[in-house]
Length: 316
Ligand SMILES: C[S@@+](CC[C@H](N)C(=O)[O-])C[C@H]1O[C@@H](n2cnc3c(N)ncnc32)[C@H](O)[C@@H]1O
Image 1 (cartoon, rainbow, N blue to C red):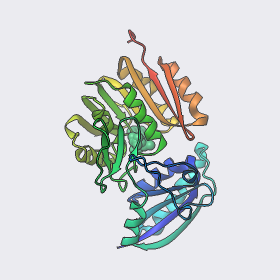
Image 2: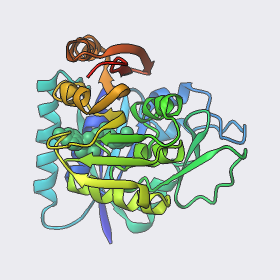
Image 3: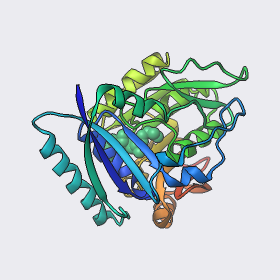
Image 4: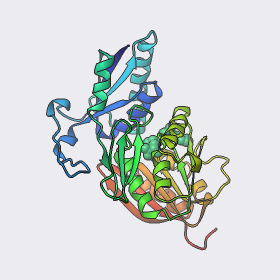
């Protein structure tokens, strides 16, 4: 099978929204080549440092590579992707150079392009994410392993917004709790919640592909019995109560359901928000305070912010 490699030169800030656009356009995955990665010391969970090849990275900014099957819709799909990326400017997202190139690759090149980038990555104290094709052996007995196929919706689970969410879940989940995962994507946060001790997760996403992806990943990770996955717009019509609500979605979307999150949380429950870019931090905080939350933590990784808020004990 022939594939077209679509290369998009952009910025770190635009990785997440452009990845979503590409997935929605039907690409079977996104490779992220971020120049900043070259300056970081990278360590595998085994403590080995491995070097990255500078030739695999753009001279500046970020290069996203996506693979689309060559068919008669290709031209149309590429135009739609370009239009959707340009529309990001309306949300104040810096799309940088926004140069887009196309080239044809064969099946074999496509498979290798993927796999060389993905290694097991330690995300938090206890959680390691490993691609499904790696035969990964835990290093310690309390290590929790999440298996993900980066070729599926919403990638590798190692984006800073996902990492911040998992690190927060690790600090706040207590055994037997109920968690809601709003905008579940690949389902990585649902799987993490169960592995970290939650009894049940209610996972929601508006996107059908994401819902399927979560269903598959909860099965692969053997937690399907405890995760109820449903296509839903945020928390619309949801009636259950939760101990923790986690949402890794853009700030604009978090702002739309802070009050619903407050209503559905038990007193003392936590709202873990992530996916917030720097300049939207104050808006999200203000919205959370207006809804009645107390802000417990504001954490940052690269340009991304995660805010952890609590519904006060004794409130209703
Ligand atoms: C950044 S991804 C996060 C995926 C995953 N939770 C993670 O942390 O890696 C955001 C997800 O929110 C979903 N989403 C966006 N708007 C939504 C809405 N109104 N209702 C439900 N899900 C939504 C998108 O489809 C996408 O899967």
